[in-house]
Figure 1 (cartoon, one colour):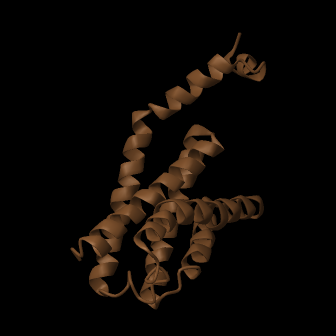
Figure 2 (spheres, rainbow, N blue to C red):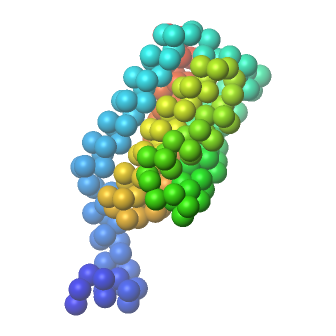
Length: 173
């Protein structure tokens, strides 16, 4: 029997093996940390351009520490990935066949939803390119939508954790 026929007959063990294989793929770990590193480096460049870019009119200023962590690490990455990355990508991919144009348009939406300052819009545009590019790379490579969604949420969460710890809590920049 082919793998496809086994999976179409709803063999749960084969499905679990396939998911396990995807989870333990070293390539995705490398891709994930490469995108994360590029994202952190791009933020450092923007931060050096303007020290107030990360905190200008910060909507989280008056939140408690717990609320900040909840929003930054869980709520924002989930909602933003689903509404500002996945949904626009799926819509634009039906209309436009170019991944590059899809990434640019989707990243523009992501950027304008982060309009705290002009530099925050530019930084968010770069962030959108990174998240959207990562999503499309993972989805194309693995052909598993849920994996692309979950890994993009995780990438967003890791990046937000970096920003929260390095910039806000440790005040290193």
